[in-house]
Image 1 (cartoon, helix red, strand yellow):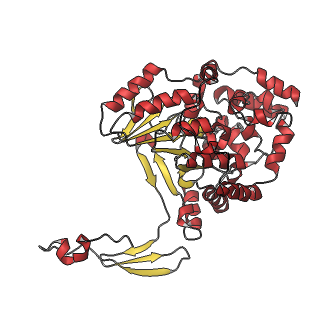
Image 2: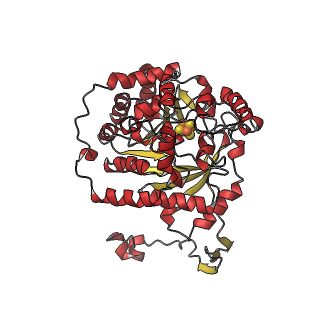
Image 3: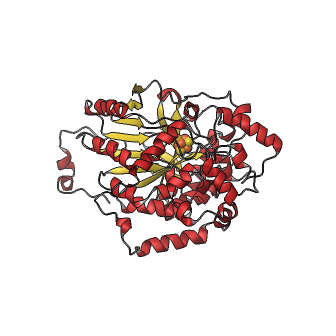
Length: 454
Ligand code: SF4
């Protein structure tokens, strides 16, 4: 395995990714941020031990063994170094064949696919794949399929119409109160179902500071913007110092209340969520982080530790799953995933219908599948474990939640409802309040004295 590691090291990365990595190199001898991270505490909190022992029991045994089978010669010191993982991503089919069996014909097909839709997978994520199973749900997310080309004309390059809502380069402003800052198109892994697959061919870019400053100026001048979402690509590919520069500038804008970060690093390269990053984030809250687990096997002890570090730094973590054929398109798969997320204190937030993106049709499911999954979860498990199933509408129409229909009939005075078991219930509809000159306080004197949430 030494040979393969050496070869991996010698692979060149995209030129602009070198630029990105240069920012890492420049940071290597930086002083850590002043504020001490909670995760620096030498005494590990007992709840963390408890959580990890639960996960270790649940984690499939092949996860650890696959790592040692594929990357047995990589010492922990390198394996746990996110920059090593990033530099040693597998980006060529020739490299991939060292880890996953591909026939000569498959190799030729996949080379053609990667000319249009490149390959990039971290050694960590590759080690989660069962190399002997062509239908492995982790593999389907990371390894190209010939179907990306044969069904490649279905859908659109930019189905959400993000280009139309771009107000300055890199800044999407669709809703009055929030904006999306796209800082880079570089990701540690190219997920085969990605909505921004169209960007992969651009060879990788990072916004210059002048471009970032133009975005900041737009935000400063509009006091309706209370929520800034930093996304990509994956913004955590940037150095912590570079990210801090952007985040600290956003934080200076009085009308911006929250900052959100969209990243798949906790899933595909959890080593990135280190104490330096968490310590930096903890200084600029409220910061929310949305991540993207799609399958319970992605919830490894390393991923759990990454989420735990974020939570202990005051960064709540929500999950946005994409519904994918052959990956998580069953009640059982979604329930296992959402229960796993709750065990690591990550909230299952959205279940997205896979967008109509060119090159992803083979992974898309009928909308009914998503509704049936919610039907199979709602009432059968805690509401906390049930995400909201949404379609992100084409041409910038926004998100629409979909759920099973529980209303059998409805009049002004009564609703007939069915519950999760299919039993029917009659519910009196209070109707509109009668018009009265009396104030609400007269009708309900206690209302002015207290609010009773119960
Ligand atoms: S991490 Fe996100 S932006 Fe990057 S390839 Fe995956 S889904 Fe697309």
